[in-house]
Length: 454
Image (cartoon, rainbow, N blue to C red; front, side, top):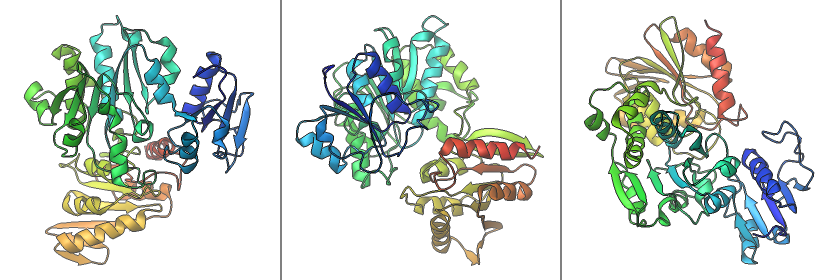
């Protein structure tokens, strides 16, 4: 890429802003920002400050990409979009902030991907390394990618001794042609069916995390997910197979602060990475016993009148909600679920809701309420013993389904129905866009409502 090239940035969200600032600082001046918004006055992360560059805005923002030498797409812009592929065929270089980061990064990269848990795993690795460091190299450990700040934002701060931990999504890797030094593949099921045309495309998009590794690199796989065997065949790296069961073998009965048995699937690969980096076991234990996890990931909010409330707004797919409802086997539970479309399959979620005898009430909201309810009804018909209207009786257990039209009413309904010793979890299994700007806004609203009950 030459400094005289005509460059387009597709999408001016958080990553697009960071990419523009990097390119501008490095002397690239012929930049056009292309975005489907009609105005960039609400440019994310810039407080309404729009750079003085050429703009292509509105619904036709992807037209005539052949006008450019290099096109950088943001993760939300599909690599396989017809207009992008047309430009590629006539010789336009298609890139991304992630590709540029991999090309320019002077240090080793730890990359983490998976359908769920990648943000928690990547952050846990970072926390362990920071705690193991005794303050010596703390400023050389960087976390980014699909979590926190865009990696391109800290590229100029790196040196050969830095360590970078990246959470990598299928969106970011679909056209990536480099792999990290240490690759971690967690669970592989399906997600983002509103973005990918099918499950096969989604799973293939993640191949890049191991496909370009070399001898001397490392690839860590969760062996409990069969599809990971296919990924393992693609790499020349040293393969390490882990399982959630490994954690107890390594650490015995230590009390891990992360809630729920599903989080052992995040602890195991984080430990494997830190073993490669020769982190002392006692330093790992210190972090495992004290770090409670990320905001909006089964985050403990408050205990009010003996009821514990958990914010799991980041749960935008069924597998993560299944993990949430399995996390409190000793407590009666109310689940708040539903949201906007991601073309997810709710069949397994329906089965688990019926199977979890401690789950007493499910409150459904949003566009996906009908589909989740349908999955529960089908599961009860197939696996349950007795059905009466929208209340299910299985042995001595009653499951009550409740529908509410808005989010506030759903949370209040949970509050008035929960009893001492119960858990209320807002774990939607769906996106947030029917009611909120994003999952963060949804999670903050939940916490605000819960704290108003004090």
